[in-house]
Every structure is written in structure tokens, then in C-alpha cells.
Length: 96
Image 1 (cartoon, one colour):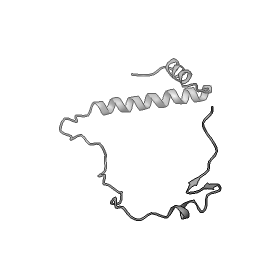
Image 2 (cartoon, one colour):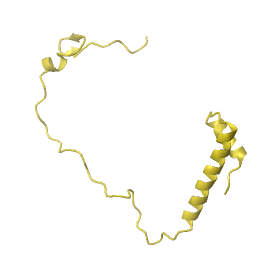
Image 3 (spheres, helix red, strand yellow):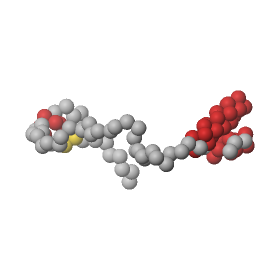
């Protein structure tokens, strides 16, 4: 399946991209080469290949979730630009 220049122009229009003539030619060739590569891959026999979700082994890199003491509220708000008790004061972001 080959894409025509009109196909690329249509996609560019829908994507709201302004492409020059040179970019249009370059993209048409590039996308058609990609499609040819995918067609070639589709010819491979993959019946005996086990499906995978990742090409390399994946393992959990998170630390163990343990509860531990936190900072007292006074220390937490000590560096805040505006503080009211144990709370930060921030500008209102909801329009009324």
C-alpha cells in the first residue's frame, strides 16, 4: 500500500500542519518506506513466537511501601511564602 501526495496533504490538513513542498516530498517517501518495512514484517512466520509486552525483562523499581514519621506541620510550612496556621495560602484559581 503506497500513500500518495494527496493522502499526505490530507493528513497534514487534518493535523493543521503547514508543510513546504520539500517537506511534503520528504514525508511521502519516508512514510512509504515505513509502510514497505511493515509489509515485509507481516510476511514473517510468528506462529511459534510467544507474545511479549516488553522486549527486555521488566522488574519493579519501587521501594517497599513502609510508613515512617513525617515532618511536623510547623516545619513543613516554615518555608512557605504565605502561611495561615498549618496551611499554605495560595492565590484563588477558581473563577466566579
